[in-house]
Image: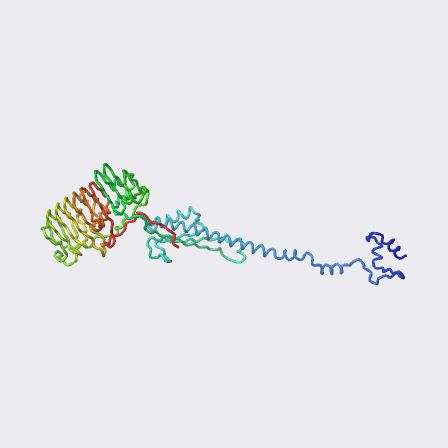
Length: 475
């Protein structure tokens, strides 16, 4: 019967009030027992206790407490990433600027201010901002492995970055730095003929029926004229390469290059630092000196005041048929007129440097004429190593001051003919020794007769004239 009572009381659902009453009633076949612990609706104390024991939602509370710290760390990480990005950008700017500075250093008229100007322009084009950045350019590098390399250009950049999240931990703006060093290394072919004039038409010219072969070297002209290197008429010019800031006119046979290198930077005068030695006021002779067959010119025979320099104040002429020797170690300063070799004369000498200077507007020059034989070589050591003929750079530009090599002379010269302000011309037939080394650096150079010039300069003291340079980032 108690089953019927319970079923009637509870029914199929347990959500009635009777369920609330009878859930604490225990019914057995012999009795109905009511539990002593009646479940009453919870009071305030019960609710608080249950809340204290309830762990659901604790993660939300912890997350809410940690959120500001997490956001700060995320923001700080993002800001540090921006610093590294700025560092990379600043390094890129420094790299490009130092390379630009190294190219400017190659220019013959460069100055410290021009290097800084070029560096600043290049840096600005890549993102340098003078309002937040500072820039310095130094030549040569002030630190590192290239302080002794005069071609090196060092660029230092500093950028100030305002603080964002890091302002919670730091008091001042962050400074990032970038440093780069670039230098230039000579490369390409070597020139044995270089015309220094920066604007002359036909600065290097080959004309008439001349056949000029520059064996193992290049012809170069600093002129910006469209015909800076000119080959005209039936003339022929054979070289390894031809290089000029300007252009070429006529046919040039090139063994190493497929076409002329035009539009290049002007080649720095390699001997611009040369100076005329202090001249003796005591001339060897006050009048013209004319040779006799078998003459020998030397310091021992002609140095009247013991200063190691022989000064000829007049014209020094080697006459036809005479054989003259210039002894080893002699330096001749030709003051005022010319060194002239007439047809059929034989002139020999080793370790010779002839310095052509002047005074009062009169400058010395050289003329080697018809049928003479010249076998002379330059000093291999000292201030004038490799220099055979050197005309004072103060000499005025005048036809009377030009150097000429005329008519069928057999010329075996080893060394440099350096005439920075005047011209050198070859006419007739001139040949150098098969193993010779001749380098011609003059304002302008012309060939109207055959010339065969060799460029085997090892051990001669003659320096190399490179027509191109490789600029690279080294630090």
